[in-house]
Image 1 (cartoon, rainbow, N blue to C red):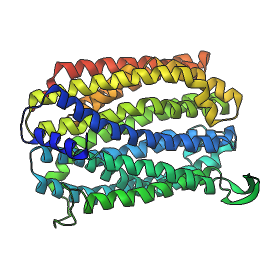
Image 2 (image 1 turned 60 degrees about the vertical axis):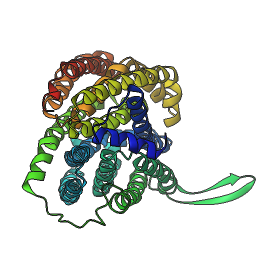
Image 3 (image 1 turned 90 degrees about the vertical axis):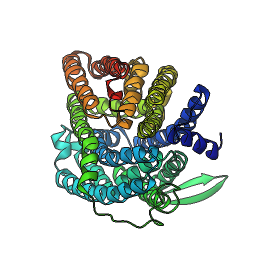
Image 4 (image 1 turned 180 degrees about the horizontal axis):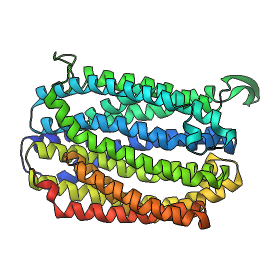
Length: 471
């Protein structure tokens, strides 16, 4: 389907016109594919970082793995802040009110910029002692601290990127965020190539070629990713403000000063998500603390396995992004039956796609981990825990997509509580029991059990339909 065809289908939602099941499926697929590509490119960038740094040895990989959960915390808070505004925009566009949608965009832009600067200040303050707090060994403290410090300095660029891409997705434009995130992945490879490795001589088609390099190692990986993100954020913001059909604020003047009503609505959506990200990442940090005493090999294997698993579950997040847009616009148009139909389509599509990905992950686990590290012990351990996780992928998809549905509905508090209870009461308690006897495998068995439990409770809430009562 062409972009024009997709826009025509979105107009059917906004104009309260009937939609056949085929049209609903077509629209879901057309929105999901670019969203999946955007999510996969983001994880592929982490995969590339891990592979390049992995060539430097297990300690270099462990230094990034040690602080990775903390970087996710700051990224999660930034995403929550952006979502508080993008969901409002989806509802307003569904209600055919682009003027107020642009007003929310302006207010959101100034708000998230201030928020990201505050987060950056906090991150810089803790960047020095953080690796020691997480239980890292002396050999990786300096690299871990340097990596995190560079990451946090460029957090405003990440904030702009996630805000602009979320706004474009809320309008139904999945193509541009996807293309720009793929560009970010390509730029990451190029920048890493020069930042991580030192100047070296290589043979290309029989010719001796000297390739310049900064030789910054772990910090070079952070700089490469940051530079790629900075370029992408600038392009994403330009398209949003100057080229978007629905949200081009450059041609429609207005105030950037946030109003109480807009901030209140954003807070109602974003604060539960932000608190959830904080406590969820706190749980992931606790998981890192459980893994850290198992040694450098376990830390590196855990980090690589998490990155590899991300390739499997990112399609679920892509479909969840599409679900948030579809549900948001359907609710804005006050179409309850269509909202429920899109909810069922997206959640079952997510489960089917991630079930297939789980099979692929199980079969290809040794090859996937082996790409990222030349250390055989790390490869063997990483592949074994990755295969454990493969069994949880369908139910993990159920929780991911259902969460995206609830976000589109503006119902974030209860799902956040469900995530927190599942993570802390189920995963961490089982991991603490199993880790001393089973090592890293015990931690991942606990993860598998918890993700299946989480999927079940999210499906129960989805099919009870209480989240639909506000329509």
